Image 1 (cartoon, rainbow, N blue to C red):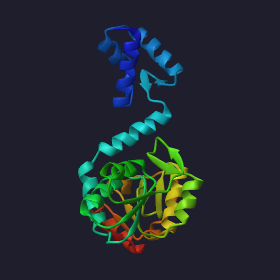
Image 2 (image 1 turned 90 degrees about the vertical axis):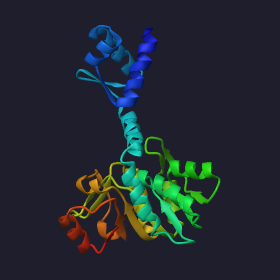
Image 3 (image 1 turned 120 degrees about the vertical axis):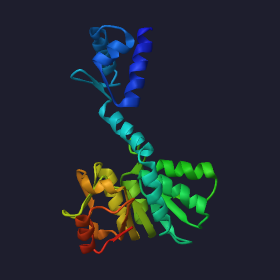
Image 4 (image 1 turned 30 degrees about the horizontal axis):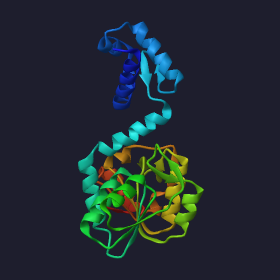
Length: 253
């Protein structure tokens, strides 16, 4: 195998697995570990990976992209269940905002399949692609600054356009929900500010998320729980969380 072919194979493994080990690569390619270390050093200089003790990982921005792809294909059954519940909240003639959320990918598909006369407004690239491929439905993209690693648009232009709407409903994703700290959070500040703007422009704002997010937390709080109309999830969280949610007067679906 040529050196260039080995380098490409290493990158392919990184894109699939997210990380590689020197020892494993040495066995796989049947070369010395010192040879693999030189390969990794060469690829790091090209910003194609970041070396770690005993191996390498994707650069930070590519790690985020890898996580986005992984989220899209993980826990599909739960996301489909969430999307079905969310569809039941949408009425004919509604203007609905679909935020950057993997569950909203499934919801967009169901809206089209249902034949409901709904105007969908979104900042998520994949939702736009779904509507474009279907050549059906009514969709408006708010535009803005592209975040290629987050699969959507954000920033001041995006927020300004969002503020010009009054959505009947919005469906938003989250990295984490802390009912005891009254926090709905994400990791990306620009994403969080965009979500906050959507809530302000919505008559009803719903969090659309898997139940395991109740045990997670992000670094940027974009909303209080009481700012939401309801939370659409795949299954009931534990009784303590349900009780805490009732105190915020937020419906759980």
